Length: 277
Length: 204
Image (cartoon, rainbow over all chains, first blue to last red; front, side, top):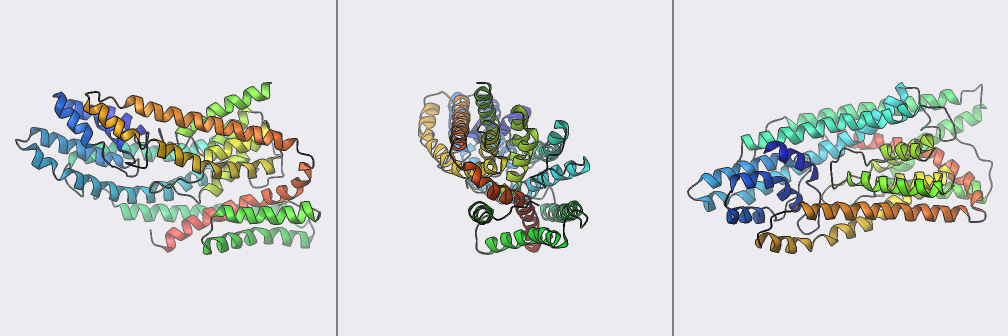
């Protein structure tokens, strides 16, 4: 039953809709458990309808809620007064969904996802590939290395995601019925801080590495001092532009659009002599 | 003919990989950093594919899909960008910016797809009430629609890119787009830096 639910949890967001969010996927994941708990068709129908109501949380940590709900359904089915037992279920479900959405968004979307890009860039750097940084350079590179970067990030991320999907199911089931179920099984704030620090350190390392590569490629033996200074000044200028657009509440697309418009104006319309980093 | 066939296969593959973003799996196989080199390899330009993919990925880090928000679609962006170069014949720099636009323009489509599933709830409840509790076919329908929408969308952008390639004077844009493209890694790296700096500053 748990393994089936685990496999189905990969589809928890299928059928996502604005009216009830993940309700379809959530009910689909619960189905193997509900079929086992309620052999009676009418009771099964009622249980499925119960879980077709609004539900939304972070998809990877939804397993904690799934495990919890299975446990609550089991206890309700075995109770002489199931209605009384089921009364608290929507509240517990909602409380857990909100809490895990907040935790999961911070860990997976806010930290681990950007870290997969860092891992990709570091793998490429370790393989000696900097072609992504210098768009005008045509460097020979193997397909294996090109794929190794993103795949390393995917493996790193998926290891976390799959682990928490499985562990969440088990932990949620073990403490079923509690509104704080699973919230104390890990020191989440510490994990979040740890990931932030690791991510920031890697960001700084990658930016310094990239800047070092730019300086090395344009060293004075190859370019004039003025040209070198101009090229070294451009990355901080882009960073400052991005900072400014963020300060005005604009996305990175706005900054990219500004860079594109200015470049086209200078080099395509006014025909200045182009140069590339 | 082979180029068209490759574009169709690539669009179909993009449709499949795109499902990973929300509908199924979420292993990050739909991210531009992966879609770019894969489609680049399929279309004979792995280096440009990887470059377009990772630069789009760096810019897309700025967007987080929380609370039902529909961010710009990285899969559509990478596929449209790579195919604009390989099948549309545009320069990588212009293809990249075209991909950026394609990803942003997919959000309203994704919004409509999600909204179109809301009326299903009533139908499904009626079906369960009638005794049929199978939800599998509804999920399959959802996957199919998303897959088809993405594939058609990417093909449409590839066709647009091919048409742009025939525009007289399009080459005059390239010095400007090439320079802007050469700055994109730095804009992306600044995004990576700010993402984590903000988190540390706000203490988690």
